[in-house]
Amino acid sequence: MLSLSTSDIQLNQVASNKQDAIKAIAAGLEQQGLVENGYVNGMLNREAQNSTFLGNGIAIPHGTTDTRDLVKQTGVRVHHFPQGVNWDNDKTVYLAIGIAAKSDEHLGILKQLTKVLSADGVEERLKNCDSAESVIAILNGEVQSEADVDTSLVQLAFPATDLVQLTAVAAGLVKNHQVASNATVADAIAQGATHVGQGLWVAKSQKEVTRTALSFVTPASAFEEDGVAVKGLLFVAACNGSHGAVMHNLAQLLYKKQADKLFTADAAGVVSLLTEEALDGTTAVFAIRNPHGLHARPGAMLVSVAKKFNSTLLVANLNGDGKAVNAKSLMKVIALGVKKGHELQFTAQGDDADAALEAIGQAIADGLGEGK
Image (cartoon, rainbow, N blue to C red; front, side, top):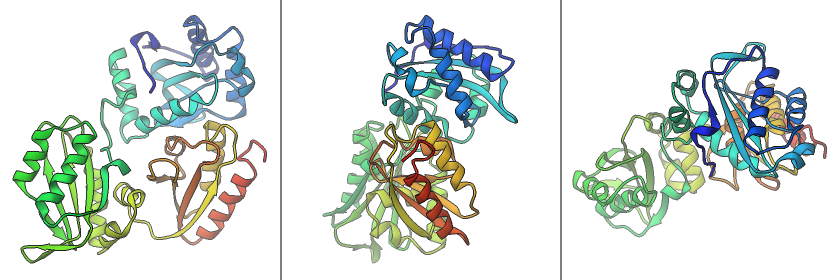
């Protein structure tokens, strides 16, 4: 986990262009003792190869692989540009995160940062930061924009025979996620669950919740509660409104009468259904061959190929948390934390879906700009 301190943050910076911004960041990395003299050349060369702009007003300048020997210690240097820096044509950067990584450690840093920075509305919050502490809070995910939903919060085929048991298990998953307490579990049980249709029930609690999270549990065998089928239960532990997107996706599933998909999916599938709008399409799985995984350059190549097609494209890292994300968003693709050998599952829906999957598969086989 990346640990940031106020000494890593430089507020109220000004740069006339991205080259000047990168030089200043490189000087900061050198002053911190993270890199040796000359690392700046690798950062500039890397930028010349492919832009490190991620979106949402954020760029991640870093060195090339042949300048890794100039890295003394893995770390970052964050420069905040409240007036913005013209990075690429009409792309403005408000936060540039200079990365120095000795090996593939940068993939972990990128995954942590991009998971936080891909949330809607983060650009405006970064632009208006007025202290190093507020920048750190955003980068560390302390300012929550998306509810926590992952496979550790999914329990399938639990041997329950009533709603109280299901509710207790679901609330217990959130407690084990360390964002709730025993009081949360007790409150959820006391409030009871509500049937929202098609055998799906919802329970909730706001008591002693420190971070919004959702869990999902299915019984080993469907049963009835007061004559109504119980096929699954969603528990919402909320301390803010970041669960809105999940509830929207859930409403879409119910409207399309597709709740059964939740009851028959595996844990990764449940996460995808809750965190992405329902997508029925063609799927394909490809293994990443790049020695250093999907860092910024091959990630950008993958996104570039995806954007050539009109079809909706989702991608999930089958060796990660299983969450499907927009394959046309560089920020979200990098946040998957893909390493060499990881398998990516693509789902395409649209008139050119088959062509899109074929092109993506070929691009991955060709090395995504880094050779086979």
